[in-house]
Length: 126
Image (tube, rainbow, N blue to C red; front, side, top):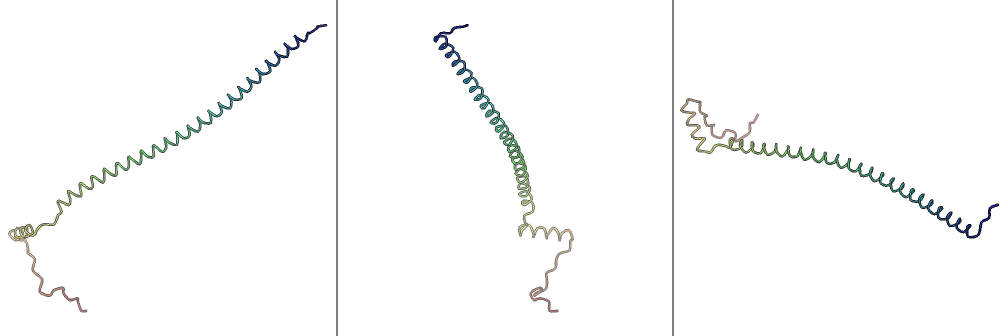
């Protein structure tokens, strides 16, 4: 039969306690690392979703900017054309009207006759 001294039993207790503490520490570390990995994965997915949302918003902003730029270009061209047309379609001055009438008469165009006095001052009485 085997005989163990108290010193052998104490050494065995110390070794068993160390092994148990080491095992519990490793299991605790594994659990902590698994939780951290899960948190990182969740954070990565959250950031990925935010990144996609930002990319969509960026495309919307770029499209809005592009359409606004095009609209401003069209408006600028329209304003330039309106200014050119306004310069071309300004009403003639009194001297220009007289010159145009004289040229028209010289070319033989019929000239307007003045309206009789009092014409259009009283409404029709029918």
